[in-house]
Image (cartoon, rainbow, N blue to C red; front, top):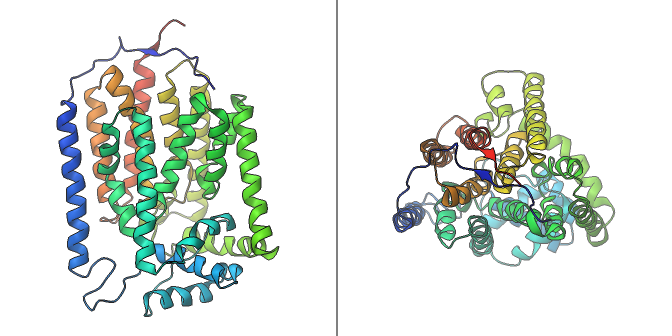
Length: 401
């Protein structure tokens, strides 16, 4: 769709000068170098991928690899069988370990991880990051609209933790960011990206509401079509029992992670996790979480009907998605780079306020410490970005159409 809304006037803003882009670029490159040095040091000291005895160290990626391996062995439904899946994980790294990296994704995601399992575990681990990191970086660069977007994307602290775990945050951010970008001018392509995002359905819950409210039928129809393919294709490829296995496993996953806090509630970067961490009941946590989702969804719906810049709308939707789900881990926080990129695009065009710069920098710092402290600082980071969006909305007025 073509964005016909008026651009906000900056008369009500008090823009400040920001450091020249060459200094921003130098700072970003320095951060990237620090991440590389950190990972290299951790590897050399037996803290990442290999221990001091040279044995493989399990990461989140092992769950992906094991699921793909089971598909190659002709037993796709066993990806949802905890004991069988765990046995393949231990076989992959060559020794037993405490805990379990469950496979909790819809069956369509098996099409992605199965080719990776043709490679040895560690090679597949690096190949996965090498494949998805550029997709994420190109998406952020496209949002910002300038070449500096590449280095800013890679300097975001969420990148470090996604590489550390071998998780799928880069893929999620690339699909979400690409969908939001395409909604402005390429509705069919936006629908395709949204359909693919259904591999992680908690990130797409608000989109149908926004699309229906704004009568974006082309985006909605293409998204529905791709989602339908992702429902039918696994049944054809893996047999009629694959979806049965998924739906039988789903409540077990929900109960173990959200009900029992299997991984620790502090790991959840959500209001649900915060309430449970401090002893609140599951009912209370769900009530507040649903309230956040309704409040965020309503606010975004109202915003998308106003004459404000598309970047603000897109950033608000990206933040609302993160606030709405109860299931958000620190490696998912790389997705926060998407709404931040839209805000940076506005800043480069219209200028930054002091609060913009301070809040975005603080949000990045909170993402960095998220896995290091026993508190969901990622939730605070998302709320800070939301505050920048709110100030942009309330302090700017639409210019005449």
